[in-house]
Amino acid sequence: MSQAPGPTTNGADAAPTLEAAGGQPRRSFHYAWVVLAVTFLTLLTTAGIRSTPGILIVPLEHEFGWSRATISLAVSMNLLLYGLMGPFAAAFFDRIGIRRTMSIALCLLAMGVSATVFMTKPWHMIVVWGVVVGCGAGMTAYSLSATVVNRWFHKSQGTVMGVLTASTATGQLLFLPLLATLSHHHGWRSAALCIAGAAVVVLPLVLIFMRNRPQDLALLPYGQTPGESDCAAPSGAGLNPFRAAIMGLQRGLHSRDFWLLAGSFFICGASTNGLIGTHLIPACVDHGIPEVRAAGLLAMMGILDLFGTTFSGWLSDRYNCRYLLCCYYGLRGLALLGLPYALSGPQWGLSAFALFYGLDWIATVPPTVRLTAEAFGRNNVGVMFGWIFASHQVGAALAATFAGTVRTYLGDYLIAFILSGIICLLAAGLVLRINRQEVPVAAAEAAS
Image 1 (cartoon, helix red, strand yellow):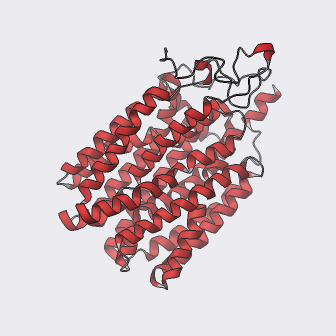
Image 2: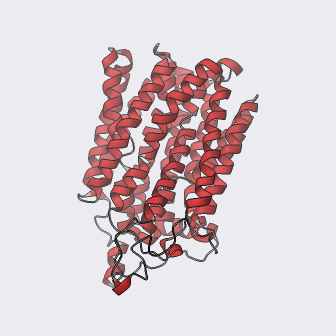
Image 3: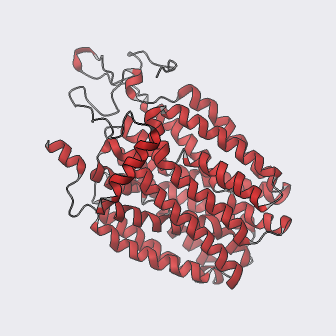
């Protein structure tokens, strides 16, 4: 596939290049950092869009009289498609390229979020926010991060993955307080149009600066020397994207490690995006905490997660990722068990929860990606982690619906918070068995 020339494609301006004199890489600015920046901005915008339902629930309740369970159904559809699109998006990255896939995703997001302002019935929200926005967001899910990291970076992959994962936190930090303020003073429709505009702004940057592979610019991945061999092509390379994704799923279903990774990530999604990301603001409103202040708490968690997830990526380059995940899930479970008391207790209790939970929010992603690469090979990370992330979003969707239903029929979120804490403690034990018996694919490939 032909690519438009990049802004600095001359070998003298970008290194290390394949044509470096004497076989030695030139040490200058590497275009991988431009790709990283564009990917970060795209994921940041997507994160802002995905955090919007927490702002919309209470206003939609008041304006249309929709129950929280009804609204949560649309949010669950969004979360589910956000996950299920991941492995297919990874296959599209190989077939039509990262830049085209990201551009299509941003167009879908801009159109879908803009159409939100015309909603008048519950099924409108399910179609527009659940299906259209869910599919657009899913095309820029964590499989995008995993693909970019493994194509463009040969070293420091965990740290770079941590930075990209932290874009979710940064998106909350930038957009949630602004959206909450707009919704409070100018109505929820102004908040929706604001976040749709952000997708429109990022689209030209993707079209101009994004590139599919280092080889498109005659580059080696960052940190790779000319003497090191490139990795083999993905197992589904050249296939129809849907067939490649299904082949990846079939491969995973026969792997014990896949079930452990997917099961633990299912619990991760249930306890973060599905429960806290969707229902913390409404839960705070139930306890007399203003919506803008509650959004500020989520934004503070975003600041902390920016550091926590980046640090987690650095740790995953240096320490056993199974032990890291055990600590993350165990601490998260304890935090969720204490959340009901933080909501009804002194003011500092909720701030302490936000501090503790924010550092742990999505710190699980970098070590999970690394364990996936160890189990299935670096070049299959996009599709395989796409399916593992799909389980994350299935958990998020079920938790969003379950928590909304619990609130509708029992009047509070107590049962949802307690159950989520218990299953996080269960996940802390499950992750210790990942990659314990099966020979990692990457190691087998190296041995052969």
